[in-house]
Length: 199
Image 1 (cartoon, one colour):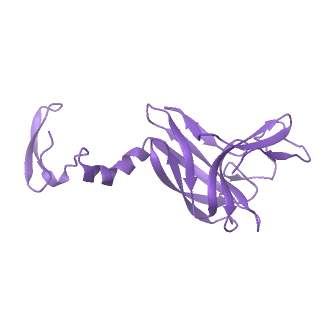
Image 2 (spheres, one colour; image 1 turned 180 degrees about the horizontal axis):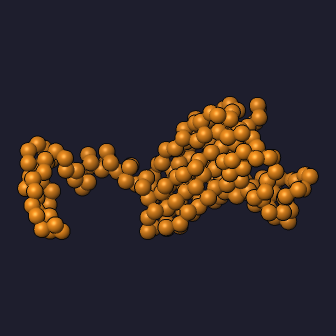
Image 3 (cartoon, rainbow, N blue to C red; image 1 turned 135 degrees about the horizontal axis):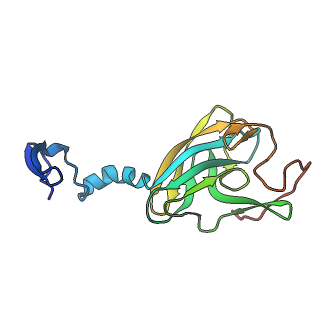
């Protein structure tokens, strides 16, 4: 049992080390209490879905859309789902998937959000899943960064900072303007892109 929170010393017995010791009651956090859950709950939930290497490509002036990429690792034993996102840089954000079908690039909104299996890692990258920035309020310039909040079904809200890379960047690294990670498109002079998603 946890002692009541306050000040003073509490005598505790540790069965693992077979010893007893005195601790300051003020240093003990009982996560069963509402104030403790409100203060520390978000931090604990974020540990279940870890977001790494977020980045966005710079956009030309006047561009209406942009894209954000990242790696999401689900550390928990239960599957989770990325259901949405929010940022001040665009009117709305959606989870999209891009793939090549018969040599044609097709992009669609992922219905119900992106599944993140338990103990697995999902990579959002060019030519695949990404967070679409719809209705950009200003162009994204290389060297800048912007805040973005991801919404998970179980992990809740996870806030990240997204650095903007140069237009030729591929998976966060600057190269040429080709798209090597999109099968069937390498060295092709042109392509057609169809959007099958709805706002």
